[in-house]
Image (cartoon, rainbow, N blue to C red):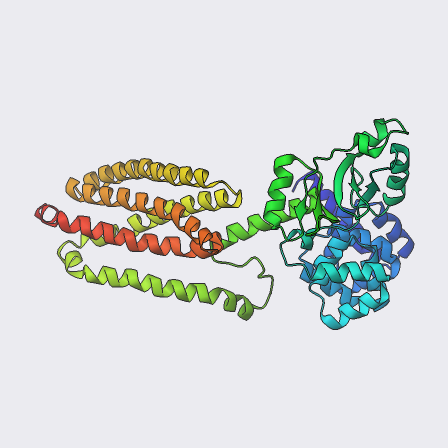
Length: 455
């Protein structure tokens, strides 16, 4: 355990002890001294009894800071609201950043949601209602509505005054966005620009009018790529009339990147990242459709092997190496799949994707030749049968090349058809690889059967 983990563990033990002893004043002193990330970490490890004490000891505004930093799944955090009084929960929601509150409220039932919204200021309630209607995984669903807005005919001094007033609630103060009389985005000014400019200088003279923005329905992956490519701290969000309605900050994008990566990797195994239930029946019901589908596909491999039953009976030694060939080819195909999915996630152009296919084909050929030669020598010496070694080596080389090619082409084809390339192709690569490997192996073995048996 590292120093940081030891410190976090010690801090949590101290806080829990203070809550167990119901020492409210000391708890507030210790808890509020922590960084909000540490507060969220401690809060997430408390039992319901101690959480109820936290609700009594902290104001809604103080707990809102903790909830803004909490990293647990939103559906779990939504359950915490049910432990609070309606008035207290509404107070926490009103003090949170809108985007963070909306993430959680999406998992609150309609009855409780309406109770909370009725207790919120009218403007806040309207913003939350509007954001709840945006499609999941779009810019509108992850944007914050707290940002600094200035007008083009202001002076730098006047803009700084606006910035100071808005700074308390704003998601970030490093960018001030310039709008016209219709609230249409026309420029951006950095905090540095405002500080170093003469007080009487007009905003239109110092703003950057080449401002980049995203539409409210833009996919969150595209937003993440834009922020990453341009090294933005935040990016403005506009509606279809070019009116500015929010911003997306880099910390939200980090969460998006983590989420998308988790989806891609879990998709390779056909598992949904939303499986957070402790109910084994619920988890099984989500996984069974893929597994049953793969079971039937796997039966085709068994049927194919039975078709070559006569061949195996004449040269039973062939059966020994089936798993080696299918396993190696399957592993190679999965590696190629991971590369292809990563390329698709990074939004490579079509030329880049074609290069990926060619690269994976050549990579498969190099790996296939290397493993084929290795198994040829091993089997030839081990079984004193270099013809058998040649058959197995050639089959392994061909199977790996085909698996690598399939691993790169299938996810790209799935993406073109509108399916999630990770989830749609991941579970099938190994099964397809088994099928093609067996077909290649037994066809090559059939051709050289007389030489194998003759030995």
